[in-house]
Structure formats: structure tokens, C-alpha cells
Length: 293
Image (cartoon, rainbow, N blue to C red):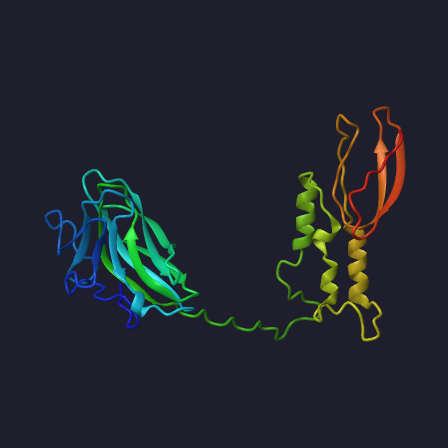
């Protein structure tokens, strides 16, 4: 693993021995090999073993208080491995422990992976501190008691900013070409609900608040509904709230819907059909509609 120039970890590859490092509830030992040469450093000349572990939180740690900056995103990469007799794969975690200005202790999960004793693996993660802290320590921990945790290298550096998205290329498009990807999403969603017997409320498909956005352009400068607005109203009529089912043992059928006009069809066990209409105004409380059959 390449060591970044802006790495805030001191002595990240243990070239300076154990300087800057300590054990969290256990001993740490410096090695250039283990198991008669079967375990060698992944990078550099040395690695550290956290040994004599009696709990999952035991591991390797370093105080980074003086080198952390608030409101700065950090990337973390740790090269780890397990060691011991009959070791099965275990979860290894990177954790940032911080003590706040009011002396509260907090633990921030940075990253995790399943490690084994077969080969080195790289644990990766990110974290961000929004406030100033009194103390900050990064830990590598996680395996069950009795398993030695090996750390070859640890890097904590400023996270790289994501590159800006390139603008879409709309050159040489044929007239009528659809430049919107997945433009039939709403139709597919409605069909999925219908195929699976799920109730759909019309306002789940179109929220009328969108009409107030400048980018919606559903009305013209005079406030009249334009072609896009008329199309919206047409679709809202097509995609009405539909609720169907059977009355319960009390003769009740409950459903939720948006404000507006409703048309109800009730079919009895003998095949008799009763039709009734009602309206729900904005901010109405739950309504009870009695239908005599």
C-alpha cells in the first residue's frame, strides 16, 4: 500500500519500531516475520501483532488528536491479517474514539471487513468530524478473544473530492429523441403495484407542490396552464387512487387517499351493485361513509 504524503498517522509502516503506537487492552509486538517465515510484511520491513487479546475491542491504536481537522473528510486504509491456531475468518474494524469538549466518549465506525490468517487484506473506510474534540484515537480491533491481530500499515489522509460530472452531450440529436434515461419509471412502478395488489394513491406519483418550482413550467407567464400542465392533469386523471378489497367482519373497509372526489362501487355476495360518490376536502379528518346494501 502506497503511503500518502498527507497521512496523519505517525510511523505508519513501523520503520521506527513501535514509536507512536500502543496496545488497546493488550500487548503489541513488532515482527519482521511469523510462523517460520510463512507470514511476511505486505509492505515495508515490519508489522505489528496485537497479542494476549481477551476481548473484541483489544487491538492497535494511535492518538491523532493534534493532527485531525474538523469538517474535513478522511479516508482510512489498514492492511490487516489474523494469526493463531485454528483461526476462522473474523471481522476486523477500524474505529475512531473521540472525547468531546464536554467529556463525552463517542465511537465512530470507520470501516470493517472479514479477515483471515491466509493473506493480508485491506480494510477501507471514511469519517468526518463536524466539531472540535478534546481527544481522538484511531483503533484497529474486532477479532474474538485469543486471536492475534496483525497490522502491516495504516493510512489516514484527506479524502479526495469526487470529480465533477461531465455535462451531457446533446449534440446531433434527432428531432424527437428522448434524452431522459429510464423515463418510463412511473409507469413501471404503477404496473408493479397493480400486479401485486398494492394500493396506489395518485399523489404518490405526482406531488402538486412540484408545480410551484420555477423549473416545472406548468403555467405560462399569464398563469394559464400550458401544454405540460394539461398533460400533468391528464396523467393525474389516469393515475387515480384505486383501492379494492373485502369488508371485514364488522362490515368496514378502510383505505387512505388524497383529497378530491371519490366514486365507490360496492358489490354484495348476491351480486347486487351499489354506487355512491363522495368528496374529501383538504385537512378533513378521517371520514366514515355509510352505504346501505
